[in-house]
Length: 457
Ligand SMILES: C[S@@+](CC[C@H](N)C(=O)[O-])C[C@H]1O[C@@H](n2cnc3c(N)ncnc32)[C@H](O)[C@@H]1O
Image 1 (cartoon, rainbow, N blue to C red):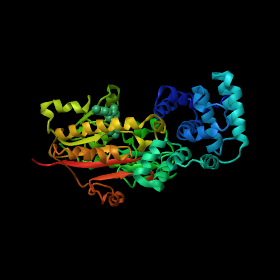
Image 2 (cartoon, rainbow, N blue to C red):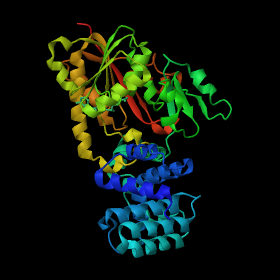
Image 3 (cartoon, protein in one colour):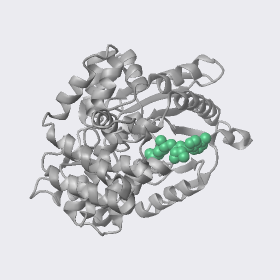
Image 4 (cartoon, rainbow, N blue to C red):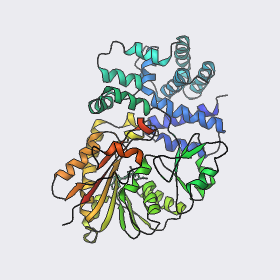
């Protein structure tokens, strides 16, 4: 019988490949059905994330055992080969024969004709005892282009590696590529209106599985996984799951009780809720998202956390400028912009294969349009926080500079060092209006954040 974890992981991988579904959401969905034991949940997660992360490296190695181009294979057969090669090459605790035997059985159940091929390729893979890193080094030894070589070894598209190399140099790029292939740490933000961090941490005193975050006074970092969906403090609205890096962003808005706030791109509402918590739920927050189904997520977040000051609406935030009464109406605006998402590759490994350079160019236009709209909607003297979860400079500083340099909106960089956690202040010293939090520094996702102030007229 095929191990349940492999069957589920295979189904998710096929869905990601053929329907472009999100691995993290498909996993959440599958694991939420409660059909898998804790051990199988962990294995299923590792198979899905690991196979997607290492896809390019796996393909390069698999190709050496195939007589035809690997991308010509039927998607289900390809998913079986990749998932099994991942176990053989990257997981030490899985016996190779068990993975291969399940691979053949899986193939018989979905594509019987290809079972012989799967068996032959996997046996050949098992016979070669060299570790993946050595095989990849040998395979790329004759590749002259550094970016191409690094892209195969660390498993990324070449264009992205080249772009990072141009921006950060080779050594930092390697460190980023490695960090983004690490498993993500789980972290949570305490809803300070309902609990204290000490209260939540007290649950973990005995096994030491959680510790206070050094990046946020409300943050907790876990040393092991947790079934958040059935964790009481989560169900009772005492905590939200949020990356520690993301927790640094809402405080930059300096939102005070009574202030009118706009969160332009708000779903699923993680940062909106953080703003409301920091305002003591005594502000007036308009939270927009362009997708109706995502607006419901904002409402669910607010309701779970017991936050009444958030009003969620479905609209393209750029169109708000057409409403005369909203011009200059907000004390502060968060623009957590739609972006390429390369800072969250640890949570969404597949986006490296889905996003293209052309997407990035399109995104920068959308980001600039949204920021220009924010400049119209904020009051004179008001603040705009612009953030993304990517390390690509054209979506970050490039967007902010382009909008400031139009010269029509009276925006200026605003020093954020006073609101940053002490650990990050040094990193922002050179350019005090912005910060890039890189995934290879503190084990967080990658985030860019900048604060702008509209000059008083
Ligand atoms: C980075 S996510 C926001 C995450 C959110 N701030 C949080 O912390 O939970 C960007 C969001 O922008 C939304 N979006 C994209 N284009 C938009 C637009 N023109 N107007 C409003 N929302 C938009 C997307 O649907 C997506 O939910």
